[in-house]
Length: 421
Image (cartoon, rainbow, N blue to C red; front, side, top):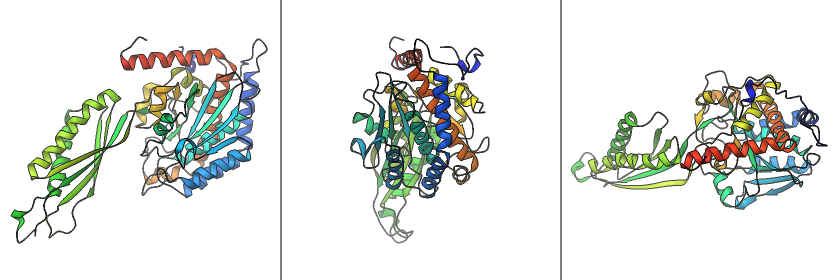
């Protein structure tokens, strides 16, 4: 697939209509105009979600707000979709064309609120969905807007996939705020791990010899993981925190606990890294004479498979809005993990990043939380909504776009499994 970002022959204002098909350029302009018409409402939604952060699977007010706006636009909305109280689904269209899924996230982080900018993701996805809905019928397409809870932990998209949320979907898209405009986030596989060390209490001064220090076991395990980090691949990460560390200094800690994230470039390599991490943690337990209890939390998040065809289309439309979008070679500007990776294994998908914070700034900080409700954050909501909606228009107006996207996806999934490309 040619890189459309460098193809001067591709003009985002050029008509996509042929053989009696609707005019794509006109439809793109209409979705841009629709986002402009809804601008105040979309920014208000972003700010309201930002001001009222809710944690994974508890995003009730964000869920209700987004559903209310979709219902005001006369979309068919299912609240509490796919067995999850804070998931939703809205649908429009009904033609013979492709089904495009626009995805929203809206959970926050503990302590620092919307420092990942999910308020922007939610409002941009809402705007893209509403704008695309304005043209879906005339383009003979189908639209589904999915509200997906618990991206920061809990894997709402995975639960929704298992319940059938992607059945019949041909392509999926969302975006993520960052410090840079990049065609794709670099997302690696992850699984969470909780470990509990069981020791034996004793008086720390009178009879320390009778105790077995669970905190010592946890500290030794943490240090062993730190040593392991010297000998893992550049795209692998292990990081953790202590969640229990004893009850009082004069009691030998009988129990300690920690919470780790274990990440690797792919799901397959994650499975190879996990036993190495467990061995390091078990060594701490053995050294301190304690027992170790382990629990892998939730399903693993997969690596993100970027779709070059759809990514190039997004970059093209973002450029028309005044944004210069870096290619996937710069994807490491934003590295992390997301359950959008699991979506990308199922259907052609994009997950571009959109510049909000200052260049080089980090998400998951208090400073980025402030940026997420700044004028730059508001612009990202509107620009992101327009660019995503324009990709939907491309998919509905030109069958070659979906054909190319599907070929990209077959190649990526074949390479991942070692199968035919």
